[in-house]
Structures are given as C-alpha cells and as structure tokens.
Image 1 (spheres, rainbow, N blue to C red):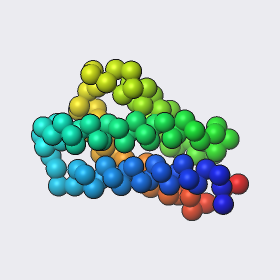
Image 2 (cartoon, rainbow, N blue to C red; image 1 turned 120 degrees about the vertical axis):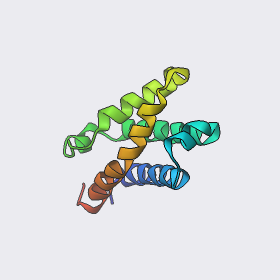
Image 3 (cartoon, one colour; image 1 turned 135 degrees about the vertical axis):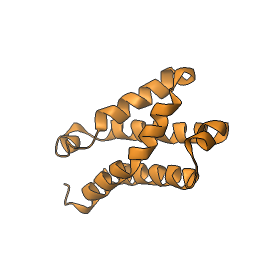
Image 4 (cartoon, rainbow, N blue to C red; image 1 turned 30 degrees about the vertical axis):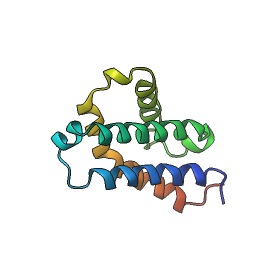
Length: 112
C-alpha cells in the first residue's frame, strides 16, 4: 500500500462531504447559505492542501488530473477569501466528481 493512499482517500472523503452537503441544492441555495458555502470552501481548501502533499513523482504519472488548479485554488481561498468568486466555486464543485473518479483510478492502480 502506498504512503499516498491516505492523502488520496482524504481527497475522496472531502469530495463526498461536499457532494452530500449540496445534494439537491441549487446555486441560489448554495450562495444563500453562508455555512454551506464556508464548509465547501474549507473542504476545497483541504483538497488543495492535500494535493500539495502528494509528491510530483506520483502526479507526473497522472497528468490528466488538475493537480495545479486545485492547489492554486487553495491559495486563492487562503489568501483572498473575501474575494472568492461564488460562481467559480460552484463550477469547481460541479467538476469534483471527475476528480473523485480520477483519484479512485489512482487508488485502484498499482502505485508504488
């Protein structure tokens, strides 16, 4: 088992928490609920932070994963929290299932 499985599993867990919290919600519901928005931001931040912990040696083998974009988004959330564009965050949430699928693919592979 890879040392990085824990990181990958944490990413999946955060995605699932976001998915569960927005299930059945519209964009208006999302932006109208400060707690929901803040929780999603924190979880996306956590995903970005966790991605930064995954070594390049693993990332280079899975180039279709948007590693850098999530890491950069983490930086924006950390340093420009009050200026985060809610539309962009909603768009990111909508592509999280793709990231989840890609991470599961990595976990199912024989990574060293």
